[in-house]
Amino acid sequence: MKRDRSENSVENTDPKHTKIENDDPLMPFMQDFEDIQKDIEQLDIKCAHEQMNIQKQYDEKKKPLFEKRDEIIQKIPGFWANTLRKHPALSDIVPEDIDILNHLVKLDLKDNMDNNGSYKITFIFGEKAKEFMEPLTLVKHVTFDNNQEKVVECTRIKWKEGKNPIAAVTHNRSDLDNEIPKWSIFEWFTTDELQDKPDVGELIRREIWHNPLSYYLGLEEFDEFDDDFDEEFD
Image (cartoon, rainbow, N blue to C red):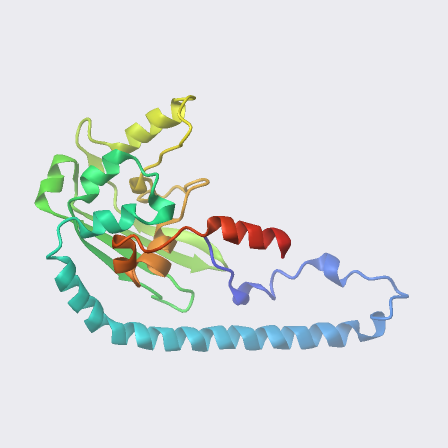
């Protein structure tokens, strides 16, 4: 789930697009055409930067509201566990994850930390989670540069013996009779890219964080099929 960034569009112009035949009617205008296109792209970059600055301003204004919301969430046992597992893209995480997520007392997002849209997500667990792991605070900080995602901080989880949900995932994947491949949300707390799995960070920052109540109540529906159908006919 990586975002396209217009800053990269000028640099990555495919050379084959500028290779035209000498008798092509576009040939006399090619240089002017390309220069104009570059100017348009530069304006797109400027627009993206200005939009990001506005977004940051409103992110700052939302902070007091997020704090008030968190005060309510703290009073609802298992809120984040239920919210995360009810997101359609996270519905096939292993059951062992839920046992641990039941102790997730706070989820925090610092978004748009720079003009490239870098972000940091923090999971804070209650003391009872020590039965499963340490530390109780997990952080993942993701930056973007030239449309490339880079993990600059990721908490290393120390699992207690027999409590590692990723081990259960490995067992499930080795079971050829298992028709529903399971995965662990804690696989996201690594520096390795999850292959063919949802980007947990993008799901949180773009969907769950802004309206967790709708997922907690099970009001959101999965529209992946519709998206794939639309892309096929675009």
